[in-house]
Image 1 (spheres, rainbow, N blue to C red):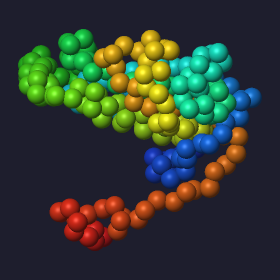
Image 2: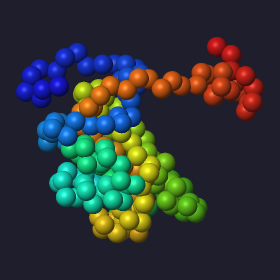
Image 3: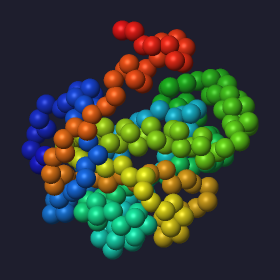
Length: 220
């Protein structure tokens, strides 16, 4: 897609879901325009999150030298240096400590809630998070919703993506200064596909869906 031309009819959410693929190879000669990248990242922030605390953080890697460093942390996967952009998707463990009050103030200022409801939300969040034993898991759950939103937004705007789990999280943390209170959830390469990939197939609902009780067959 040429960002200077009018957008074609955007695909529906269902169409974007159906045609999205994990891109195996990117065209290194095609850059991703900064305004389009910013548009994708902004779309990712619209994902839902626990108590609206938005624990996702996006470390955007574009410089070639830094992508080479990242590739060394990611089992030498070529797509890390082929793609013009790789996003290190992080989950922040303690947004309630630093961002709960700004989030509530933003909601009050926008008219999304009253001061009374903000006080109730503050209490609910504090109560819910007090008993969370695994903060990394808690942060990862919401953050992966943002990662999925990023990839669907990319597909809807003609940008290819590839999520990656094959990386050394501690090496990524060390090389890119990621603090201990952030989990390295995944890497997402963004750019333009060098080749089309056939649909690999998915299991049907009869294999993955149950009705009312685990193990009870799904019936349409």
